[in-house]
Length: 74
Image 1 (tube, rainbow, N blue to C red):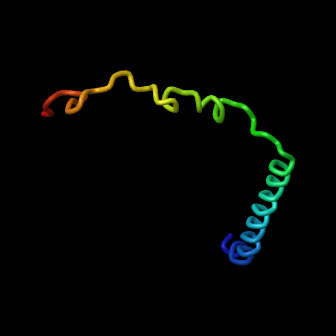
Image 2 (cartoon, helix red, strand yellow):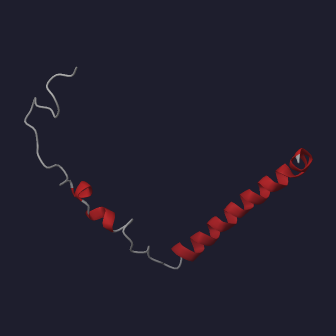
Image 3 (spheres, rainbow, N blue to C red):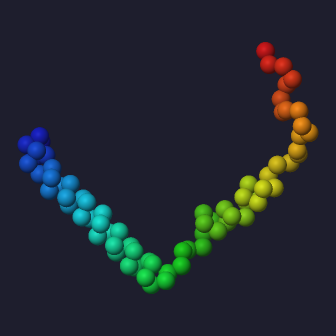
């Protein structure tokens, strides 16, 4: 097994790098240049209308100087 890796490690690395570059170019040309819109699913549309995103998740606002929890910790 060591003999194979020592002999073909640079070829394997070059093949993986080339595959990454080719797939990146294919994705770029197939999505961006054809003006394809992103799919409408909860992860990219519904997440923008949650209580956290709109800033309404806080139920009560404490006056200055007060904290949640016990006044002393043991």
